[in-house]
Structure formats: structure tokens, C-alpha cells
Length: 104
Image (cartoon, rainbow, N blue to C red; front, side, top):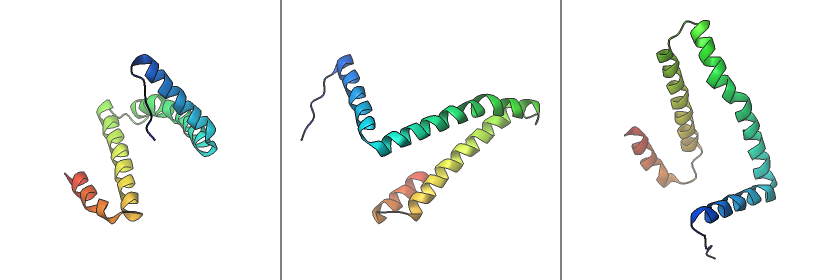
């Protein structure tokens, strides 16, 4: 089955509405969407306002050190995701390109 899509603004809005309808029709995806939305609404202000203020005022760190810490957190999440993917792999053929790609 092929799906014809319209181009332009009409096509974009139609695709967005189809995505929203899909999320609303699937209960599990809808609940996951709400869960992550609520987490983002709670955690985003902490990471964008409170932590930089804490690092600057209480810990006397410079903005450069805060940037280093953000990079370390992002790398930790990336490496953790790769580690979980390797531990619980479904396709053994993906392991070698994944290791080479992330190594490079």
C-alpha cells in the first residue's frame, strides 16, 4: 500500500494531523507521549535555569566548566545507549559497524 502525500503547506499540516491522530488512537504511545512531555516540562527548567545558577553562585564554576559538564552528561547518555544496544542486541551483524562507526 502506498500513501500519496501532498506537497507544500497543505501536505505538512495533513501529515501533522495524521501523526496526532495516530498518537491519539494508540493508547500506549499516547501515554508515553504524555509521560515524556511531563518529564520535559519538569526537567527542562532545572537544566536551563537552576543548574547554571547553582554552578555559578554556589559552586563558583565558570560557564566553561558548566559546558564541560553538559558534554559529559550527553556523552554518558550516548555511551550508555550504545552499551545497552550492544548488550541486548537483536541482530549480530549490526555490532561491528556500530563499534567502528562510534569509534571513528
